[in-house]
Image (cartoon, rainbow, N blue to C red; front, side, top):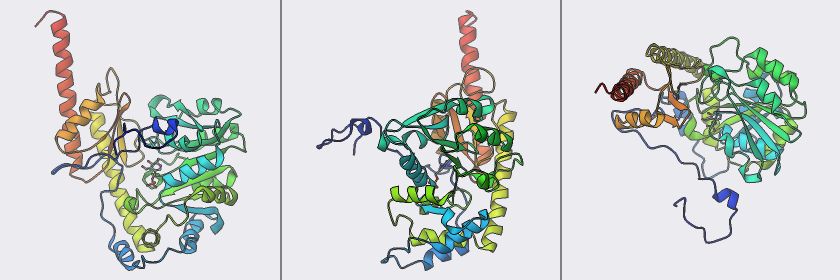
Length: 381
Ligand SMILES: Cc1ncc(COP(=O)(O)O)c(C=O)c1O
């Protein structure tokens, strides 16, 4: 289906005005896919076995999934009715924004942040309000609190922030929550929580009990490497989550995803995952350090990705699209945000030197080009 095709029936003009989601291209050998913050590890053997054993696909899964919800609830010290599952945490984001914000209501988030946020309110014509990030690519929580109006129904906090990397600090979160009306839903989107190593970062399980208006979002897509199976969860007030379930399409979470998630939470799988996560965070820190050593202003990286800002002057990339094109020529995919920067996921160990080499070559080429231009301007060439 082409984006510009005229539909043969009457559809909403505001929906037609927005292009549908487009997945990036696939990498070519010997390149790497570093564009979707995926986990480079294959599923653990125990998880594979659980997937293979969940073979009753002629039946609908038992929608309540009590065993999995009880396991998650136990980790948060809450009862099972405080846990809601969906086919990916992005589905829960959608459900909650739909459940809370009607046409003309506002939902608020930092920008740049997760690319799905701006379209979450499209279906019900809620207004997306973006608050620019502060220095060091962090949430500007004071500006976000200032931006709350009578019409604000949902505030999305992404920590660590995709695509830029920094977390929200616990003390900043506490101050922010004290300014937010207690009847406004706040979603703490912790899709990358398992990769966080900063001890000062806010952690959903530590603050959930303090705020009835807070919902914590997590996913099995990233640290647990189950992106393709689509399963994520929310923890929070049962009445809020029941409203999300009302919006959600029933039976979207498959029994295969449930089995894989449960197997991922088994003690031996958790230990294996902890080892993988430690490897990935060490790799992330090494990649960020190598890019900083090239003179780039890479912000604090607390997810499974690093961010290179676009802009003029030292520490920035002058042309994100050109850098992404240079990667693509080498068969490697990264995620450009035109005018803002480029996000590079932490992938296979062998991808790290490839990334650093390509970025180094890009900086060298653009330095060469700007030096040439400056010399030409001075009439020296
Ligand atoms: C910040 C953030 N939240 C939520 C998601 C959605 O993850 P999933 O729907 O796979 O659980 C992503 C995925 O990239 C993300 O970056």
